[in-house]
Amino acid sequence: MLIEHTSKLIKGSLSRLLDRKKIALGITGSVGAVECVALARALMRHGAEVYTIMSQMAQKIIHPYLMEWATGNSVVTELTGQIEHITLAGKHDDHVDLLLIAPSTANTIGKIARGIDDTPVTTTASSAIGAGIPVIIVPAMHESMYDHPAVIENIEILKGMGVTIVSPRMEEAKAKIPEVATIVDHVLKVLGPRHLDGKHFVVTAGPTRGWVDRVRFITNPSTGKMGIAVAEELVRRGATVSLILGPTSENSSRLVETHKVSTSQEMLEAVMSELSARQTDGFVSAAAVLDYTPSKKEDRKMASGAASLNLELVPTKKIIEEARKAYKDLFIVGFKVESGVTDNELESRARTKIDAGICDLVIANDEQREGVAFGTDTNAVLIVGPNNYTRSVDLAPKREIARHIVDEIVNKMR
View 1 (cartoon, rainbow, N blue to C red):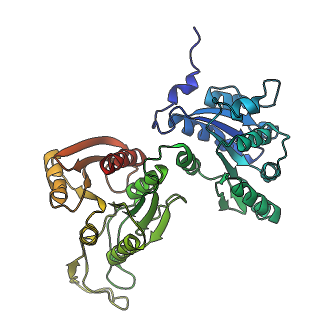
View 2 (view 1 turned 90 degrees about the horizontal axis):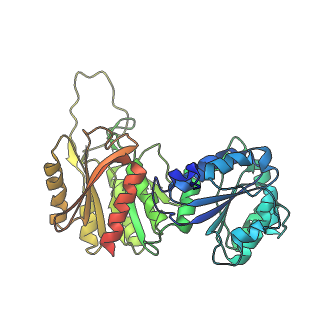
View 3 (view 1 turned 135 degrees about the vertical axis):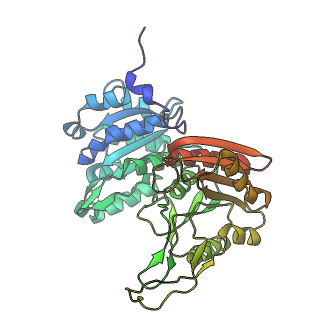
């Protein structure tokens, strides 16, 4: 009995967001092709079945055997009597759900825009566009080529056809293929569950600062990773998101509209401004906002060398409380960090915001537990809701924790 290719054992190991989805991955002759093994495997870990199509030039950069190993499926390197482009992307019930061309050279972009079909990738693209199958193209080339007026025009033509273009990373005078996670985010936005289509969220993330003088401030060790992960997951489910981000070196996906702030007051004002600017369905308060801030900021740098310094701190306004006062029906998710408490105490403290009617959900954790809260890529949380609802999520990457949190948001907002 034949067994499934062992490379497929990773399917669904990260999520089932692309379960039963079939993706044709077109690879062209850019050095960015070296990222395609990681890209294919990432898509598979979300549950997708991946079929590779390679141009002749792509095969000079990576061997088709490598992509066959990565996906567990044979690779299309030429079009034969099997009419592979139609098999994958024709007008029939068994076609792929998406054609992803990553990386795409300027040559390939021009050919697809003008309907020229002389490689397996361009011919499959023509068939996919004609069949109404979603197409995502990820350009990768030197910056001088990317800025050529004809390339710019061809990209606009493709956008006019409904093709999604993923902007490259502009580094070292090159338009480089984006990070794998960025490409996967675009795929998830097209193919993933659309539970939150038409809904808008405001999300806060990161620390805030309380300025002592022109060069000194108090803050906390938050990186914003958890809030950013939640914002990105909301977008993957179809929502639009306004992210209010405190001072951090972390960056959010280009799919997330980001507004950067510094102080607690600036974050409050940004949140209230966003809530009033458009119809908002949910507010996720994941930022580590300072509870206390210096009573005043000195206009100049204070002299050093004093034997002691007394600093008066005053409480800041609670952003979730201000949001609740202004918007009685807004769905609010709060985050609560404790230190060295029992599970029962963690739940009890989190539930106070539920019982007070301030939050619809509270995400609680204990920063003393290993791999949890500030400065880590992982987290473990207790999700607390009304009617004594609790759900514990064990230690996992923050992107995975974000999926569990958004699952709860989806379920509670139905």
